[in-house]
Amino acid sequence: MQPNDFIEANRNMWNETADIHAQVHGSKLLERVKAPDFSTFDEIETRIFAEIGLKDKAVIQLGCNNGRELLSVKKAGAGRCVGIDVSDKFIAQARQLASVGDAEVDFVRSSVYDIPHSFDGQFDLVYVTIGVLGWLPDLDAFFGIMSRLLRTGGQLFIYEMHPILNMFDAAKGLAVDASYFQTEPFVDADSPDYYDPTQVVKAVSYWFPHKLSDVIGGCLKHELRLTLFEEYGHDISAVYAAFEHFAKKPPLSYSLVARKTA
Image 1 (tube, rainbow, N blue to C red):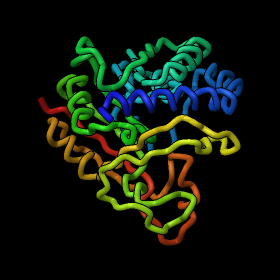
Image 2 (cartoon, helix red, strand yellow):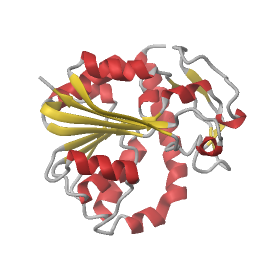
Image 3 (tube, rainbow, N blue to C red):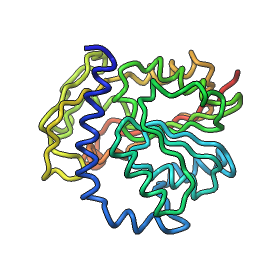
Image 4 (cartoon, rainbow, N blue to C red):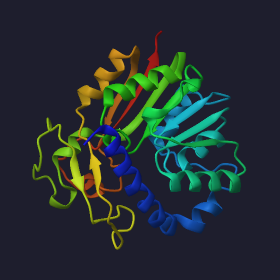
């Protein structure tokens, strides 16, 4: 398969997933987003966004899903906000949330690899969070795109699942299930949805394991200088939550901030 084949398969999966998540979140999220102080930020994001500063900044979120996190960024004081996602249905949900929440945010249906060059150098902050990197077949190209989107001095903020989790099947606990150095994608189909396990996502999807060195190395290669890196014992994926309670556990999530130097 070619990279575009993987991306298209994952787009179909996310469109199927979007229908399920609309049922799960539905009217409750539509009601919540109306609040002027609507926020999805946890303690980590609250602290790091305070350190970065959001006031009037131009922010782009890659892999924005239904836009709830970017709407939180907007309501926290950001200026221009743009969300990119491969899923037609999640982008439609994001636009509905923005309308109901009275937030001026642009949502664009696109693969991150197809983001137009008209966006180059337009943003103070690129925001990536919760399960985005694993859907990307070419991480090096992705970091190149993030770098070109940023103005000189702009920042990248990643808050993600820790890649060591690719070694484990959440249902099997801490039994090692795969090599940390695996490069072939994990193939999935007919699997329970991560928010509503009573519903099955039938579409085939492809998850690409990346090492932590791929992430840090991608920053360094594309002139993104690390200013913060932290690892945490809490899960942000809704998949590995049970791991939080193990006395001996791997890191479950991490945050990274980097600044574009040229």
